[in-house]
Image (cartoon, rainbow, N blue to C red; front, side, top):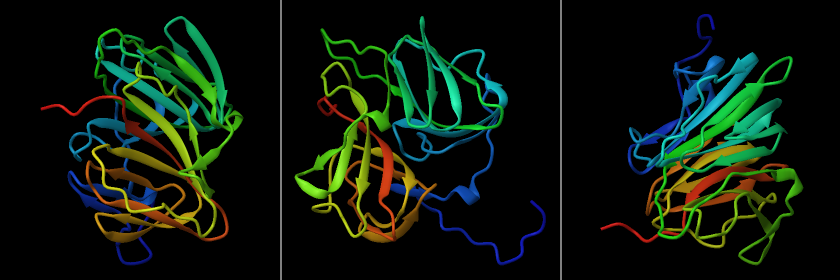
Length: 254
């Protein structure tokens, strides 16, 4: 990197257990056993206050995880392709995915990743403990977000959403893509039990986190803890769009 050319500063904000904005310029690489020829950083995690773990990964030429990812009886996983070309193996199923492709692996199914690109491929990777429901069982899901039509969010013509996983009680979580046209915003400041890990795919905005307005942009990562105020305005010349996780379809534990 060489010597800095200005004062050391950061846009990142960390409020353990509440929220975090993690700017890409401050990320460091983490060594995660089983991942070969990959540069990866752990984003959200229980150490931050999240009940899940998020990663941002650059798979270099020949990059893979030959030992598999997750696969425990109580852990589920999800990967979203940000760029490049990746082969994802989920149990006995194989998927070759490019930008906007994704795979969900239910508990007990290992996920294997292999970069098929001559250069780099980039991934957003997730895992969490599964919360079972009697008589229900999730299954492997794959698709491309670019092939899913947006629908209006809360009947707002300038805010749009896509559901990447089935809206079904078999699933205790989902991934969505939420997109705000320039000048669009949430209909109200949300306060809810769900938590989110969000990766910004495009645009710029002002995000309300715990009643603090914070500028955000493409490449940022946001963790939103339970009951933290959250809402945003899109600013700039292109839509503010992000992919994010949400726990759902389960009661709160005592």
